[in-house]
Image (cartoon, one colour):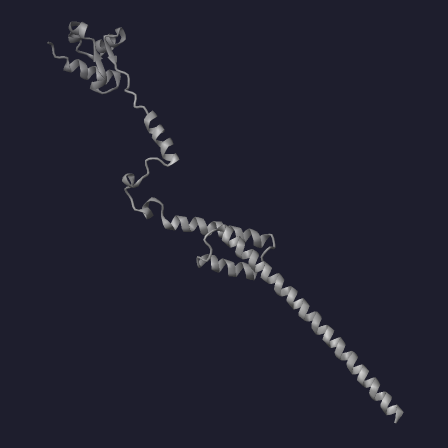
Length: 188
């Protein structure tokens, strides 16, 4: 068996690939062993005695299938987990996400004049203090506060009305008493 080490090296250089990618025709060993220059190697490559092997295909099909399954929630059990819970989904990231959502909501409400600046500030502080777990609870709280405010306004209006009524009654009573006194003084 003739050593074709030189030819393989030259062919790799000419074909611009690694030595393992070079295929030398086993039926034409004698012709190939005579080639000792790049020029002759080029000729042999042109004739098809020396070929650059095709690149091996590294299919991603299995990977894609696995990723599709993972999106459905498969392969994510306790045995597949490496990092801690916090490493896999940081608490800070969750906190930031939640805070941004809640702050955007109250910002929109303030812009739409559903909240005044004082209410906005108190809600902002409560959000920062972790009073609201999610958007739904914050909305419920805002509605409750609004109802409370409306109730207070109604009660204040009623109280004001009662006060005015009392004042009118007192004024009438005083007039009546004054009129009666005037009657007695004129009679005597």
